[in-house]
Length: 198
Image (cartoon, rainbow, N blue to C red; front, side, top):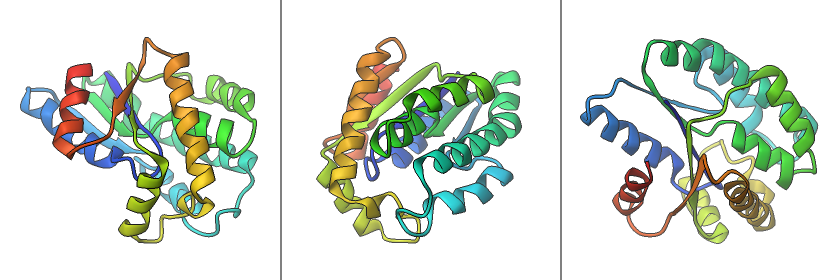
């Protein structure tokens, strides 16, 4: 299985991806825990271009191309080999992030994102969990976390609100694959909701 975790910045995806991978390993599954952008050496190099620097460093179109390049390398070098070996892949973000960030919140590029995805990736997760929290909460968490990877947080609350709407719309658009998960409460509360949905 390929399982992705999605949501706005600061929603707890990374924590939940780690907890889900741990749960699946305890259940006897062979799990690869990975992330996007990144997850392979080449994609990690592209990651630095995407998540560091000024918010307006790249146009939405350029971001689409960079994310797709990183995802292709991730798919070739990490995801596809793991799935072919019968492993479960849990990824902190996948193509839905590009659909929402560049396809909806940064510009009206959904058609371009979908065409690039069909041409270069052609894979959807078996299940996607979108962790839903108030945008102001996510922005505050991101600010508290600090670090250099704050390019998207620097675009402000309005951007995070557009992202939240985009992820909710995505869940409505793909009800067979995407599950909206209430992100309130403790990390274990959220993890229990994800396990129940899985």
